[in-house]
Image (cartoon, rainbow, N blue to C red; front, side, top):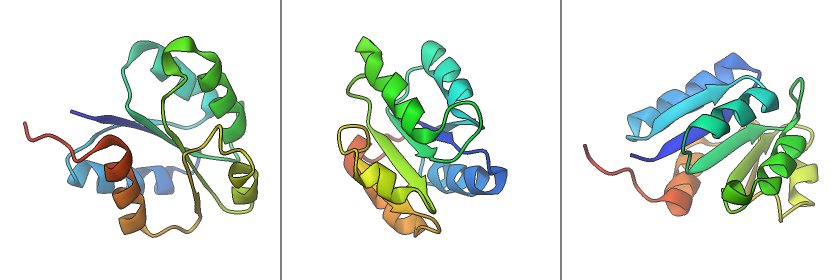
Length: 123
């Protein structure tokens, strides 16, 4: 089963996105900041990261840079979702495979996830 890591310090957004992904059949892990996300990535295989930009400890760009520094994670796709800082992500295509402006269309996000990691396998 594909595991997706959702990183956002806004619990409501993280929960809504997590529930939508779980309804599609994906396994979801959540983290409230970039440092917690890195801790999860050390111990769990993840196929995709969806991260906010503005967060405490490590922002979304700093998280993506740290992911790219890890030899085993260099090709891990990272999606940025942000309000005011979406332009930062668009200026870094080497860090982010897609950028979504908040508020985003959940159906478009699900479609991008399926494009990147495939449809979840039935258990």
